[in-house]
Length: 126
Image 1 (cartoon, rainbow, N blue to C red):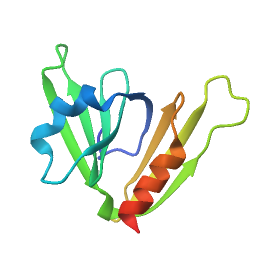
Image 2 (image 1 turned 180 degrees about the vertical axis):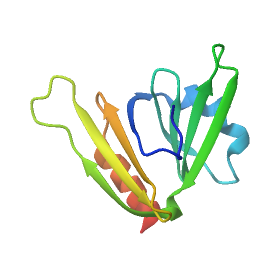
Image 3 (image 1 turned 60 degrees about the vertical axis):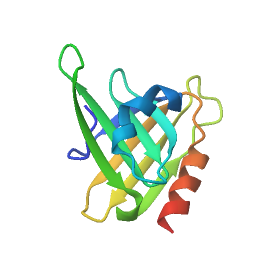
């Protein structure tokens, strides 16, 4: 389950933005665009140019969904960890600490440009 209520680690794999576009279009404000998208087995994590949106797909059929949103403006600081040099399955991490004290730890599997994510967050936070 992905949400912003629990300090947890999410094993995320990149997916095409087009896969999640219909999922969150109704939540986006004027000028907000999806930049990156990731998923676990069922749940999704979406980075826009304004915030991070998690989609927690619930139930057997997946018809019930819970959406959580955390704007970049609430991030106090963040940490990125790049993959090792000779890892068989490269993984990287992003740790965000928000103004309310919540810490979210994201673990990305596969070929993810964690530097790009760090630069994007810096652009919106600084």
